[in-house]
Image (cartoon, rainbow, N blue to C red; front, side, top):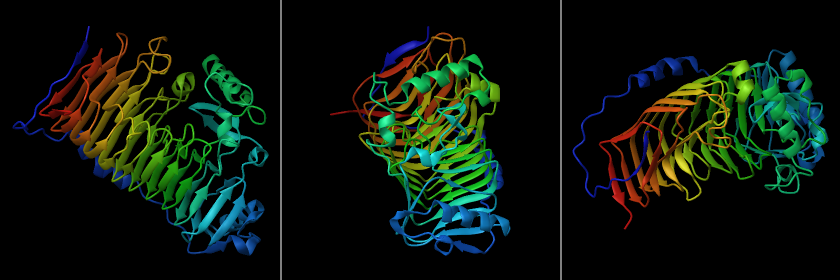
Length: 452
């Protein structure tokens, strides 16, 4: 029985033995060499030339669509959103097209009329494959696509529109509750995806930006506000760069960036202030994750700032397809509403192998629960036949100014949490004992200072 609840405090630093860099960090240059942002033809297609009016009231959907088609037919280029507020429905990108917001006062305001987001498209809802409302910005099976610029993407979601579909706990009518349960059952029962058709009357919210089965993706510079739910959702994509994006959106399930079943992803120099996880790496939920069988792997997160959120970097909980090779470095995290710096979550329904996860050189001001949280008793907990596994999770040079506790790790006998280590780190203003249940977790050459 590997159960312990313990705390150790040291008021002064100890002499640290040098911890050799994990050899996996040496993979980073090779991974980065494969992550190359797409380039586009030097041709601009200004949406106002196709009939768009930046008055915030005229529906510009048709004009934006025509500009994208014109650019694609010419072999690609930039579809330009100039200064102004442009109201639109969903924007569907095509190969070799960059959607570019030229100025800080360039705004795409997305309609909150659900009918605008029909017909349904192929997507995933919380890791489950289905057909549902179109994401606000979407691409399927395209390559060399981008959303860039200095402007703002405004989903206009609030408690009177998209967000009310989430519903309060225990409520059902007019919310996602019934449809979500129906989709979950379809997933676990192996119902063909072609029969999982949702839309009007089902209240399953779309993500803001979803690129599905795409290659060579760039999202850079833009501000994202008021999302229906997940903000950035690369799905089954390869070669993804998310750079310099400013995300401030606090609705329910407002994850900042959710790479799901993706390979070779770089997330850098971004700001996250979110209503859920800042970054959440995923690979499908339950039967779908195992059936599709595409893990998330080779993901680099660096030089980012995280404020509010459930986790600075989170792995899961829709992680049934597994994950490996995640590198997080040189980030700043600080908020009384940031639950933890690194969070892993799964259960006996999800399973999945979460391995080779590395975090270093992180400055944390304040977190709400712990520095490292591993929760394999999440939601269904031990009720299931799958074995969630976490192994080779290494954190080093983590500096924390204030945390209730360092570790909150919950496993169960049929799960496996092993080779979890924190090296050469400092934790101040620690208030509570660490919780370690059914796990192999060690702090090596660390300093813990109790709250005064």
